[in-house]
Image: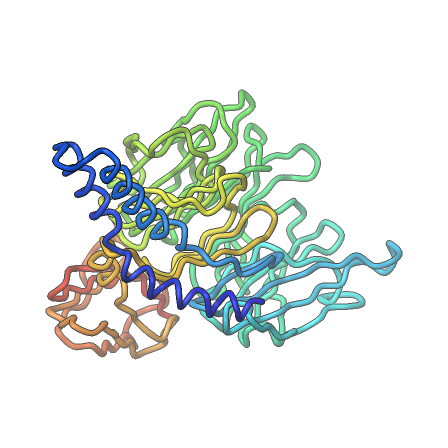
Length: 451
């Protein structure tokens, strides 16, 4: 059935190319109909035809890829899924299994299975990926968390942590190679705790008895600049900011009553935060000040992902995927499932997007409508390998010509400029950089990780 669905998808794609002018046709026909230049019955018929064409263009955008439990899509068509199965008796504990796919779950292969004690026991969750091969997960052994890492797409796993985390993990994010940030709640009083896990140990970034960590979120655009979203004892959502790697924190945004703020930074200065009470904010000064943005109604932002400072997507609680191409000033939406919450979002580029419902059903949008073609072109620039130890390649889509690039550090200072498609980063220290690429089609900023 899954292969049949994929075949149908390709057929629909060709149909949509024919009907891609549906929106334009609909608007033009309606404009002409207002002139009453043709009989009423014909006007109704033409309007229905135009509306039908437009509706096909909208409905045929998503493909159901089935249910996958704990999931991370590492790139287009590739991903890992984790299942945790309780033993028949408490003494047998929980067994975890890892499955991988290279064809959007048309087929999948079991990569590894845990059993017994140590790394084999208990559950895996909160997966985050660095690339197709390297994935990190939290490993829960009777309430004690560690971080497991695979460098071979799930075949083998190793313990990245040298210390244990005795709290309930809510969210994990990557700052760099073998550099994982997690946030959650202390078991005893639900107090918010955030830590940084590296091979050399676990460092506490944030700890507060005045904030609840059960719905906390975390985002670190750089080693020093970071944000956590927490709820205080009065139920007010607070966005806390640090500029010294977690040594000190200050309240940079108070949202009002709610559960959380989802956070994402497109670069070191431009970031977005969306709340559970319909609020949405933007900063262009690294989080010192935030401005409210309209987002078409009281939506709940569960996940935010921006490809650059202007182009971004928001997965919401009412089954809508919101998107903006102008930095949040204007939004459009696509209905994935109006009766479900979207809890996972992976944006490969503007024409390849994954979302997951709260029942673990995964959907993919893998082609564009006609009015998005120009927008999509500018998002198809690739840089590889990621991470890199020395050489970095710039791959441009057909029709693009490189005019120049510049590489900047997290402080915005330009460190390298040129006109070549091959960069030598061997002289640079490990960390995160931003590569601005100017082509004849536009400019794009991409994150680069140097290991």
